[in-house]
Structure formats: structure tokens, C-alpha cells
Picture 1: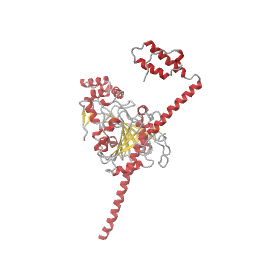
Picture 2: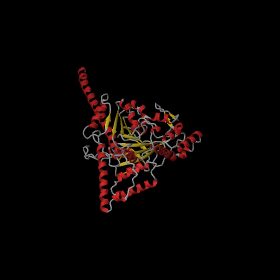
Picture 3: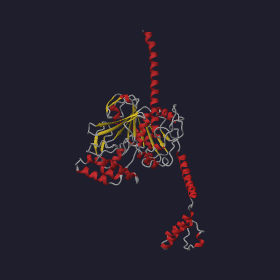
Picture 4: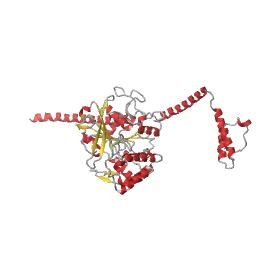
Length: 505
């Protein structure tokens, strides 16, 4: 019970009153309209006097106080880190897919990525918002040819035949495989022969490009295992500002279904196949595996809360401003009005409603014919949500999400049943690292035998990078095992048939 007594405080009883009692009296009197303002000011000044008198007066005392506060904060962070340092939760159907069951056993055995704890870094990885900001803020630079990491970097500009759009492809090629790439001195590709190594195709997320840290980290992990990595920068998304959007007939928005930080792997792919895998997923000549990081499954722009709805809108506006000289060439009045509404919109929902009639799109079914426009932002987000298509995925798919992902996990968990109905889909949920912030949970370093040699940190890439790469390697191992069994079976049949033919002859 809070006392509301207005008994004056004299100098004789001032020393006997604790600061906590002063705070209670101050709160009670602020809620009492009959208390005079001068009395409130007297109580406030008295509280400040008590606080100042309780502070240290010598440098040694200040040092001890700082040490005590730092120790308490560190203990709290260590306790939080221990609570979050647990192995990920894995959801998959092991009864109806024997191949996926074998993959799960490989990744869940001792030392496997599914059996290891995801250990977040202190102060950053323990907080989803901070780790997510780090993933977007930390951009990786580098030169075209990085001899230290033994990787050659090549930038390719592709011109689409349908509308003349320019698509940027940033390649990272291990030097062991660079002999297959004949490139000029300026870094442009003249000719690419057949690629024997697996090709990892990355598609960045909304308002991103290949220069973002989480993309570079995945490419580095792929090349460290001898694979070829390539990131496709969607229309108008060039962090270096070299190539602008050249399709003024509509607005290109960089998110479609699985294209929120998605990764596709193809083997023995030619140049043309490697750049068009996302449209030819049913081509049986290329062995594909797919992963999706931080994919919302279903999300509507009006469900994104403050302040993220404003931040996402600012990112789209930045992209529109970068390509504004091209959009200004479109003289259709409705398009210009839509651009004005988009630039004046406050949230991502308002921006989507303004741009929806002029957003470029493709039909969801072959031959993926181009179309222009949606009725409104709600129809646009419905078409972009992947939960309607994940049940029809016929190739192995790994989806990774974090429980503290403030942006998409709520919608992701509500549509999780669509993933569990498909035996080709594996869902992995971590307890920390927010939206694409797994770089704050570095994997353990590994010895020459591939076993983890350190409990925390030291490895190449982020935790999600290693999870994706291990998933791909497990798929390759199971495929090779199946091929070996098939060859042995065929050889046995041939040996059994040969004696019969000889006896007949």
C-alpha cells in the first residue's frame, strides 16, 4: 500500500527516509491533483540529493562500482547464452521418405550439424534484432581475384531477350575449377564450358543484393568446399550501382515465393542452365537441391508491425530512387501517379497498394508467361507467398528459420503444416539469431578428418551456411550410394545372364 501522507520532511528525519520511500511518495503525489507543484519539486530535488549522496566519491570506488555492474551484465549474458545454446529443432517426415531418413541420420549423428548446439555470440547473437541488423549492415568487399582465399570473382551481365532487362550474376569460382572458365582481363565471361563441380545459385532477399554479408558468407562456404557459387542480382538490385533497371514498363519487386534468400544447387550445369534453374525446376537432366533461409511461407504487408513496416518501405523507396531515371521515361499517367504515391507512402503496405497495378509478374505455371499488375497489395502478397506451392515440391528442400525472427517467424509457424505434409521438406528451427543473423553463431572449426575441433567459433561461414552445405553434401553422398548399389545390381545381373548365353551357344 502506497502512503499518500503529505507530512513535511524536515532535516532531522531526512536521513532516515530511504530513496525507495521517496520514489513511492513522489509517484503517489503525482497522481494526486491536490498536491501543490512546489511540494513535488521539493520531493524530486530531495530524491536527487539522496542519489548523489549514494554515488562513489573516489576513483577507486567508481572502479569497483563499474566492475560490479560489468560483472552483473556479463553474468546475465552468459546465462542467456546458455539458455539459447541448444541443438536446433528438426521437423520432417521420416516414415514416407527413406532417402530423407538417411540424410537425417547423417546430419544427426555425433558431430553432425543437427546434433550440435547453436551458440550465439554475446550481446549480439543473443538478441534477434541486433543480430539481424548485423547481417544486413555488414557488407563484404573484395577484389575480383582474391588470391588469399584462392577464389576468382567474375561479374556477368545478362540481357533478357523478352524485354531487354539486365540481370547481374556475381560468380565466385575456386581456383581449382577456374581453368574451365575462359575469361577476359576485364572480368567478363567470354565462354563457359561444361562445369563438373556443383553450382550453388543464390537469390538474395528483399532490398538486398550480392554485396550483403550473409550472401558473401554463403558463397565463401560453398567455394571452400570446391563448389562454384553464383548470386543472381534481381532487376535494379545492384549494390555497386553499375547496372540500372532497364525495364520502365513496370516495377520490379525483388521477392517471389522462394526467392527470399533461397539457394539452388545444380550439378554438371552449363552456363545457360545455371542461370535459369529457378524457371526450369522440373528439368530432370539437372540434379537440384534447394534451401530457403528466413522464408515467411505467408506474409502480408499489413501484418508487419512498427517500426519494421516503415523500415522496409524505406528500403524499397531507396531502390526506386536508384532507378528513378529509368522509371521517369514511362509517361503513362497512371504509372507516374503510382510512383508518386509510392514515394509518399509511409508503410510497406501503403507502398504495395500503390505499386501493385504495375508490378511485373509471371504466371505460376509453365511457360511462365509475363504479366503486368495486381489488383492491390493483398493479391500481390498472396501470389508471393510460398505456402501454396511448398506442398508440390518434388526435390529435397531445406527450410531454416529462427524462433526470435521478429519479421517472419509468426507467419512461418502458422503455415508450418504445409511443409510437414510434404516428405521432401525438412524444416529446421533455431532458438536465436533473428532474421538471417546466423553469422552471430559461427560454426566450430573442423580438423582434417572433418570432426569438430572447437566448441565455439573458428569455422568458415555462419551456422546456416554450414547447415546448408552439410545438407547438400549428405544429399550427394546418398545419391552416390544409390548409384553404387545400382551399378553392383546391374553387374550382378549381367554376370547371371552371361553363363546362360554361353550354355545356349
